[in-house]
Image (tube, rainbow, N blue to C red; front, top):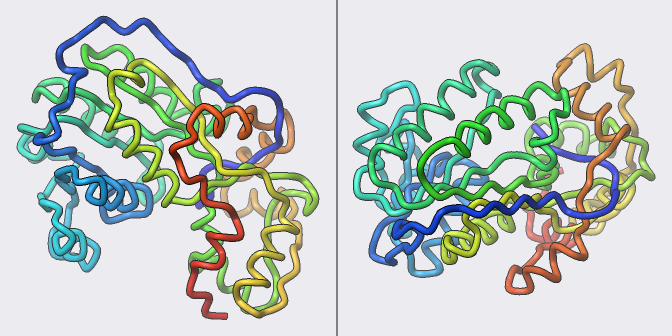
Length: 313
């Protein structure tokens, strides 16, 4: 599901701390980067970005025979089995890794499981000599939003900050990739893009490809990013603009239609809380300042993302 959307405010959320100097901050290129969620959107994009940069990638997955795992292996990744509920498998998978791309999600499990598995992963990293952890959270998740699956990430962030190892946290905005998943495609085939936001209200968005590029950039310069939390987004756009971009890319006329929060609540109180927060108080991320501070990142636009999708409408 969409991880984050909202209203523009002022500056990007970025917290810098004076992390103690540590030899582990220097990350030799010959050490592999362990990537969790490697067969999914964020982890997969990060693994591919690292491979393109010539880095060694150790892709962690529960199923090493899945099509996505096989594809990563063909690209040059080392694919290893790891289960968040199996500490021995985590320790073995992280042994000898120089860095870790860590992520968590309650979808498919539950909120308590997300926290338990996320902290278990970080604890394993702390005991296996991993030199830097990059945790991908959600925009503004460090602000006690009251959104259940944001607050779980805040708890994991807090646990990470208390460990004796260098870390960076990134908070991606709304996933553009969610607008091309099976659930969204059902309504798009009927000519409608549904969004639990007023059609003219801007949303901060980012593609998985851009998240991967940013993560790879951080892991190439870990010392410069140690102890920092950075929210990331490519642009602000309205539901109407998203529908227009899909229309142009697919050749199928699409209109934007708002879904009442009361309807969203019948499916998920968590997601209803998220979209309610996006409307009031809204998110705080300044994409202009973010992009100016990171000119080496190719911030993929909504239009570029839409044009690259194979729309089956």
